[in-house]
Each structure stands twice: as C-alpha cells, then as structure tokens.
Length: 73
Image (tube, rainbow, N blue to C red):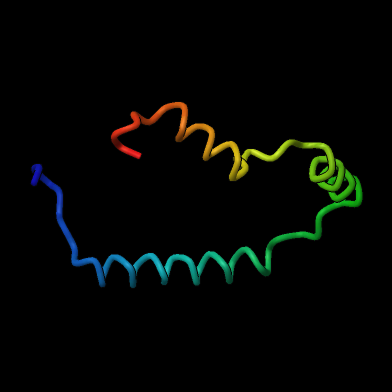
C-alpha cells in the first residue's frame, strides 16, 4: 500500500457508493429541467439514425472463429 493511501472493506465501499448515488439522485431529480423540444427531437433523430455500437451475435461468433486458435475453441 502506498504512502497516504487507505483501504476500506468492500461492504463499506459499497455503502459509500450507495449513499453518494442516493444523494446525487435526490439532487439531480429536483434540479434537472425538462429537456427542450429541440433536444428531444435531436435525441429521437439520433436514436433512429445512429448505428448500434453493440455487436450482433453473428459478429461476435465471426470474430471468435476468425481470431481464436482452433485448439482454444
């Protein structure tokens, strides 16, 4: 462990993260303005026209067959 660094148990780390998340949700839910009509329109266009960044099952299988040695498959 480096100088000035502390470690905490995973259960405490999870509790801290949960508390931060709860507080952020509370703050953002009351301060977040409704998106403008223009922004909603742009998001809709993006959803319709943007290609997916998630590979298809066929793409993943093709990659595996082409890039993994035969003895590993």
